[in-house]
Amino acid sequence: MTQDPTSTKQRLLSAAREEFAAHGIAGARVDRIAELAGVNKERIYGYFGSKQKLFDRVVAQALDELAEAVPLRPGDDPAEYVGRVYDFHRANPVLLRLSLWEGLHHREGALSDEEHRATHYERKVAALAETFGTEVSPQVTSCLLSLIALAAWPHAVPQMSRLILAAGPEPDLRAQLVAFARQAVAGAVPSGTVPAEGGVRT
Image 1 (tube, helix red, strand yellow):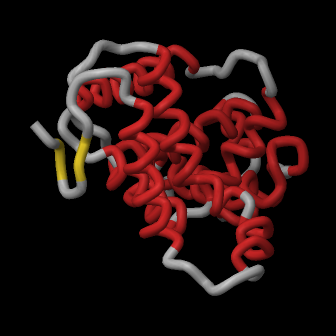
Image 2 (spheres, one colour):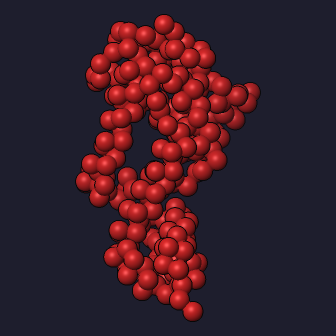
Image 3 (tube, rainbow, N blue to C red):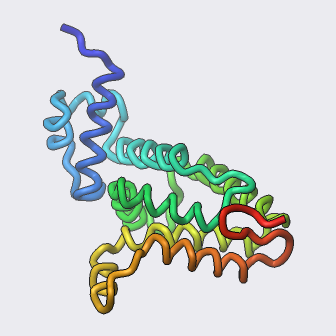
């Protein structure tokens, strides 16, 4: 009985996501991926070409899911965007693990889909600048990076979060990050409209 190629590819991608998140690209084994997906490992090379290309596809798919689940549009409250990104990573920790492995593997090398990703972030920067009522600038680009880092870092290094938060009364971390982001954005915007709680102040 012939297997559905689309179904087989998706099973391989799902299995590869689990394997790469646990072991990174260097430690991942195509034998384990194939076994978990229930297919011959030759299918991996037939569909994706190499382990590296499979890893790139897994990361790209995960990033597309994040972009779809947590968009940033003109007029969106940047502080609430931090909260939504925080929620996504809390519910989907695999993406951050993949991103950390990718950073260790590529370091400063070019990514296979770098142009596509750059365009994606350019749109986010443009949306943020429009929200602020200003032009794209170094302040806006660094602001976007800071907002994403603020939302992601507690989940990227959960051991650090656990140790630091254990030093005092347990906070509502999400609420504090959103409030911190709102204050930081108000001080970082060079001109134009400053987002206020619950939306954009005109």
